[in-house]
Amino acid sequence: MRSQLAILLTALVVVGCQTATPPAPPTVAQPTKTPENTVAPTTAPTQVTPTQTPDNEQGNPNLKAGNPSKATTDPANTDNYLLLKPQYVLSYSKSRNLANWASWQLNRSWMGDAERQNNFRPDPALPKGWYRVTTKDYTGSGFDRGHLVNSEDRGQSVETNSSTFLMTNIIPQAPDNNQGVWVQLEEFSRDLAKEGKELYIIAGGHGTGGEGKNGEASLLKGKIAVPATMWKVILVLDDPSKGLAGVTASTRAIAVVMPNKQGRDGKWQDFCTTVEDVQKLTGYDFFSNVPPDIQKQIESKRGC
Image (cartoon, rainbow, N blue to C red):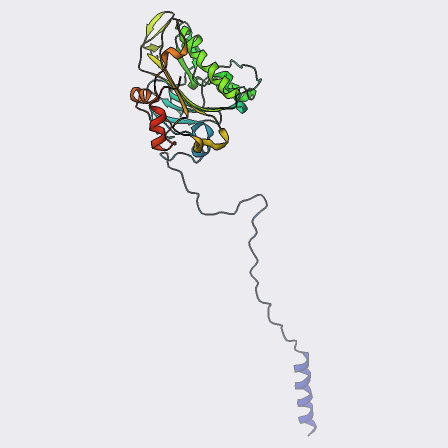
């Protein structure tokens, strides 16, 4: 009996001395933190193909009346390449090394007291590998560095005025034309804007074979085409608050074609024509954002 009791007590002591090992706590997955200032990876952004025109073409006030040649920002479109700038818009030709046309809005807000900057310089916005015209290309040529978008039309600020001296906005122009009838029309346009009107202006050169101080020339330095004629079309909005919705059959549309040659006789009105005639000359479609029936009426009349 005594031996059985001893065995039982020994067993109880052994069991009591054993310590149960607690189960391991469950593993909790910790959230992955994105380090501060690091953007978590997402799906790749949609790429814009070169043939697509950026959305800001629609919002650019200088193209409000339309894109005359349907220029695009595709560098493969070498002779109708769209250069979108806040101050104006160009269609550029790589083979001619000058703009086909420039388009800009003109109202009181664009003009101001900023001084003329005179900082003629190459345009860095041209595609890589394209020739960038410099002011030296005009040295001794007998032609003015003629503005398409006039410097005084962009006096809002120093930066705005400076933009007009990019060489993509410059065209070989006969001094008498540039400083004569051409500037007369520029001054007339600003007078209309000062009256509270809003203008949509498109200007360019056509053909080759202009005449400067040194006689006729087709190219400058064998690179830059010299236009035979200069042209400009202007849509005049009497009530800018209505925008293009206010354009009617009686809206004024001014158009001129001027020989790019020496001789200061006459006034700018002597070169007045219709927008329709300039379209036939250039192949462009001006003011295409105006309803077709109204567009046809205003483009068939002389507004000078």
